[in-house]
Image (cartoon, one colour):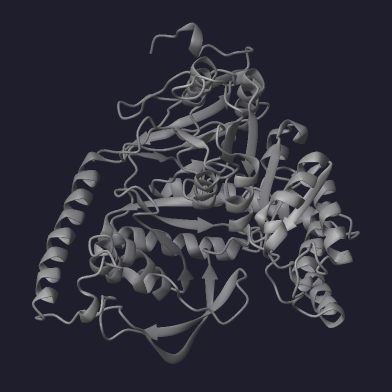
Length: 567
């Protein structure tokens, strides 16, 4: 490959090769950022991978490795064919239902309302009726234990092809949990967090029955918010009872008509809803693509608002720390550099990254060693790493005081439950080491070790894995619709609980299983899960990767050796 000035190391040390995903059409590329120090880097470009130079390479002080292997052409064609066949049979079954040949289970208008505007759009429910129902048994499974490293599931059966379920009375015990967002293992019913929550429940009760602005503001709420601000290294913070509403109700308070929101194309639904409710103009940039973001920023400054060409009242960049379906980490140093250059505001959603990234567990800002003051609005949730519920907004004191009187979540929502607040306080103090132990630090380190080990083993087995090497969210590609349900069922038969995801949560040919790694997982649990995944992968022929990493016990962190595999 001819070396251009753009592909040379920015500072003599860091080599950046960035295979971007220019379109969400199922053809994904590879991205890796690696150190070139004393050793020679073994990298062999493949015809299926596109590599482009990335600027701002000197902004990264640590390896930043992400991989998005291209979908094999044969797999893509067969996946489209599978959806095509399902669609044809779906229309056939709808025809049979229309003529009462097949029983219809779906919600329909009453006969006396048949001339009304349809309440249930028939075409909109087509996917649910004919595709989702075939594999519905993989979702909404009721558990009857703490969602820790292992859990108990209530067994259920369906006699009408997943339209309804009956409980058999049997409990499937000791299922290894690879689906919960219990990153640091604080979702537990024993230990200091559970004891503190129980003690507070006896003192304050469970419900507040009022909003924070009326008589629902407890001393524990005040302490929690001060602790969150200290944990994040910012001036002030405020908490909300629901993570989804933290985004959807606060973005409209921060932006409105005449404002421009630049949103990553893979942002969570809560961010998308909040942006739409704000009434702002929304423009979407390609996932983690800094060239695409900078282009939109330039256009915003040069052209201003449509028709009038007046300057935008404000430009708000909205990104996530860890993207929950891709397992990728935001390229925050570059986002901050662009934000400063073009004088935009930055809204960072750390729902999955807070507690799960960084040497101190303080999120993606800590992971890159950046200044928290460079992020204008820091958002996160307590539902994952802290084993609680709700979310927070943090930043400058003026921002928080403004939101206390303008945010719908702050003004109208009921206060957070006292035992939930106590769970947050206790777990956060544990992470910070203020409980006098090293349990929090140990869990943060264990999560990082488990993540790297699990991802490395899956790649060695030949699976296509998306995302960053340090992300505890591990998407494994399934592609074909029939394999979504089959993988979930086969794993549960072997006492492994997993989450499978398909359209519309992902692009139609990028169905996947999503594993969430926890610090509570032991080595034996991970090895058992990996053995079962390999077994089911062979059964369902899921090992699609053509670039299998050779197993090595002593391989440098940034030294990837690939072995080409013939199709």
